[in-house]
Length: 273
Image (tube, rainbow, N blue to C red; front, side, top):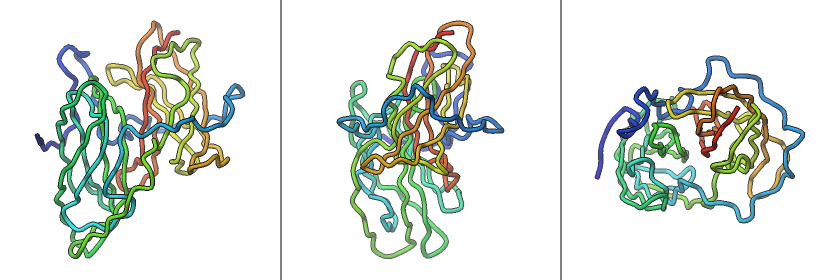
């Protein structure tokens, strides 16, 4: 089933009554003046790749990176849908303008992955332009669960030249904190490996069930090359709360191009003072 809508998802009945739903672009939750990046904490674990590498929550099976596409885009993705099975798809032109946005509902059980196969019709004014195809999922509180993008070249006419995906691994892997982990002491250590490192930085946001950003911090990505295109990242995010709460930790690669964001990964943890 297909729904078309320019607005982000709303929380399900029974969720917090005053949920501030984030924009489909994660930059909406960013503070006006980003904090200075933190250094890698001394307690950061050894810089190694997970074994095995996890597959992405959102995997582009087709089209692959920098495919040359004439309308329609024949999208084939393999992913874990968001709340109520919803998946948000958007296409941004090279100047950041929104070319299309659709919502699809996929039927699956729990967090099992399923296929999204759709034809996306678009129009451009010139002969060709670069563009960014974005897929986003949200949780029951309207927070981003995952966001992945694929950069393409759009053609106004002609024959598509579709590239294969390089692989299907997760673009930003969060190794610490582990899901559902209890975090205490006022500092959240975030570590992992990433293939996305715009200007050598990542953004970390801690968001509660009402959509409030409890803490936000820019952290450095190491210049050390591991393998498979990954580099390690680590940082500490100080937070202040009065009682234990469940939060979603979002790690975002914001490159300022087209949609402004290249990738978002997240995990849910329990914060305590």
